[in-house]
Amino acid sequence: KRQANHARYMEFQQLEKDAVSAKQFLALAERVRLELEDPFYSAKLIEAAETLLDGTGYQFSRYKPILLAVDKNLDDTEWLSRLLDRAAENATDFIAFKDLVVTAAQLKHRELGVSKARAYLAMREAALAADADATVYDLAKLAEASFAATRDVAEAGRLLEAARAKAKDHFALTHIGRLYASMGNSAKADELFAAAAAACPNGDACIQFIDRLRGFALPAEALKKWYIQCGAHLNKPADKLRWAEGIADALNDKAWATEVYGQLAGQFSGADAARFELSRRSRADLNYFGATRRH
Image 1: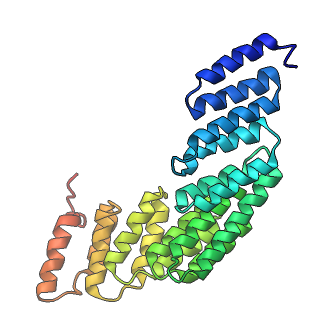
Image 2: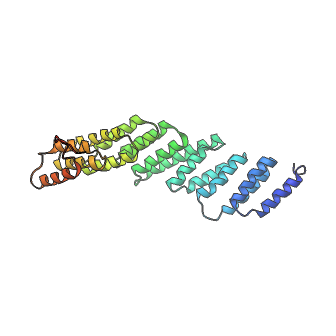
Image 3: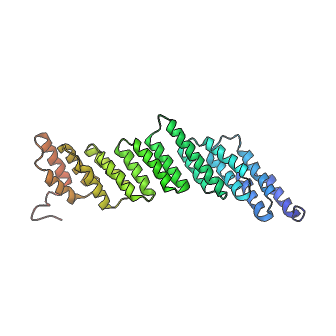
């Protein structure tokens, strides 16, 4: 093959001599595969790219092109396994870990990639189980990475339920609900949002809760439904007033706020009554019940 393509090989060898970056070596390796169909030469070029990176401190984002080049241009599962395992050992932060398992699961060498991704997810789960400081958010992130890599709804759900068992407040419950929603499980998302609404201890918490939900781009009627649920278990007049303020401030619904202020009127005395009137004046339409409503 070399003799038949002598001129092409000479040209590539010159390009190889001129290459100074990993990117150039990898681009050349792909051209060698496409134009010369020579996996041995491709492997030599990819090796040169890897050697350039070695000793510069490991970062998955920099080694990922090497991994993809081996996957695409060679049939070398041993090399692929070594690259994947090295990435797993160095994936200390969540972003690198998620990128690794998603990349592994999508490799052309599918069987190897998926089994490696599942193995790394299992190892990370075992590490979290053994870590006394692991939080609900660590488990939720693992569920997110698992779903992104494998699209396995049942497996991701199992991890989210483990996270839910650790959830102590409306923030964590809302976060898990959002992940369920992003996986297409709206029934579970609703269940978690209802639990989050019930976990809000006061008016301020209800406003925080609804602000989070607004960030998820839920329709107005869904926001109203959850906000009603959140306010339903508040007993103190001061909390009910704070909740009413949220209708105007967070949901920007003056008509509904006016209605609620009307229902709360008369529940306050002394300084609280003055606070109520001040709040009502700034947030409700006081002409709402009048005969001549101004527009």
